[in-house]
Image (cartoon, rainbow, N blue to C red; front, side, top):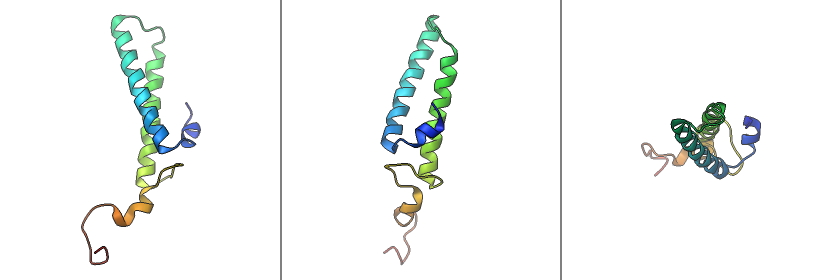
Amino acid sequence: MKASELREQSVEELKGRIDDLEEEAFNLRFQNTLGQLSNPMRMRDVRRDIARVRTLLQENEQGIRTLPGGVGAAGDASTSGGKATAKDE
């Protein structure tokens, strides 16, 4: 899947996508162990898709790029943990 297609999805959709991809990666590893894997290149594609999704989620979390349905770190700066200052209290 292309990164441009992934950027159009919300944060919740991407988290669900990671779960699906990790399950598919597990199944592919299992098939490979049993010698039943018909397309070994699919393992590489799934690993790379997982990396793409995780990268987009990390960018969103750090405020580098915002995704639909999610607030980046820039919007959470005052409430994002850390030491309390007189301004915060």
